[in-house]
Each structure stands twice: as structure tokens, then as C-alpha cells.
Image (cartoon, rainbow, N blue to C red):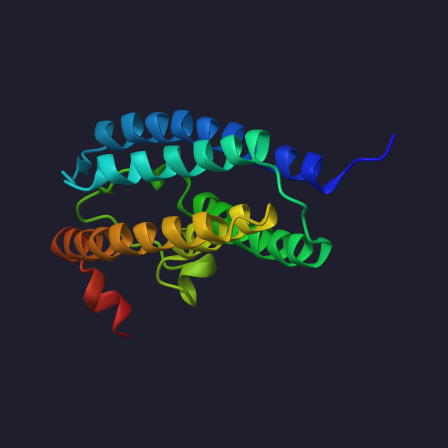
Length: 182
């Protein structure tokens, strides 16, 4: 039995959904640990929009793939897979580098040294860059360029405010700007 691009696409969607659910549990575990170490969870008014964005992004792609499948271009599929894998690499290496300090929320551990090793030596926000790549690549795999555009614009908007708040809080509690201006 031959596997079609549409079946591969569905597999990548389900993989991503399972991965994100697992990451939510990992994040909650890390938050409990960080709070026990004196960390502060920073209130982020846009957090709910980020949750809604990621949930609706995956749901929209899954619904389209099941109910409105398109003929998938092998070239576009392969290019999108490469971009998606790069996004996965950036995200997962950032998560591994941050270790117990990674969370889906903005959590600061006052006076703790900033994480400056791994990809953080060359990219200020490798996790967010990875998410940007995944958000554009996954719908493009299936030929859903309108979804890719819509969710990319929404994600950029949310990240614009999130990164500013995160950097401000990291500077306030950990000297972020001083460390990264070196």
C-alpha cells in the first residue's frame, strides 16, 4: 500500500497535536518547579490569544485536511517539511537548553543567571523563531496558503507584544538588556 502526501500530511498534523499536548504537561511541571524556586509568573493579557491561536491553527489545518483535502504539490510539501523540521529543531533545542526554566507562560526566576548557551548565543528567541517557521510551514504542506498567511500574521502580532513584555520582565529581574548588549 502506497502512502499518499495527504496521509503524510495528516500524520504530521497528528504528531504536532500530540507533541503540543505533551509540551503543555511539561510546561505545567516546570512552572511548579520554578514557583518552588521563587519564580514569578508574569501576567500576560495576550496569553489567552496565544492559546487560542495555537489551538485554532491546529484545528483549522486538521479540519481542512480531513474535509477539504487538496492535491498536494510534492515540491511544496518537501520544502514545507524542511522548514517545519527546522522550526522543530529551533523550538526543541531551545526547550532542551532552557530545561526546567522553559514554560509556555512568561516565568522569571529573579536574580538567576540568564540562559545564554546553545542557540541563545546566536538567536535571542530561538523558540519563537521555531514557532514562526512551524506556523507557516504546516498549512503550506497541505497547500493551505491562506491559513499560513492568516495564522502567521496573527502570530507575529501576538509575538510582538509577548517578546517586548518578556524582555522587559527579564531585564527587570535578571538584567536581560545588559547581558544581551555585550
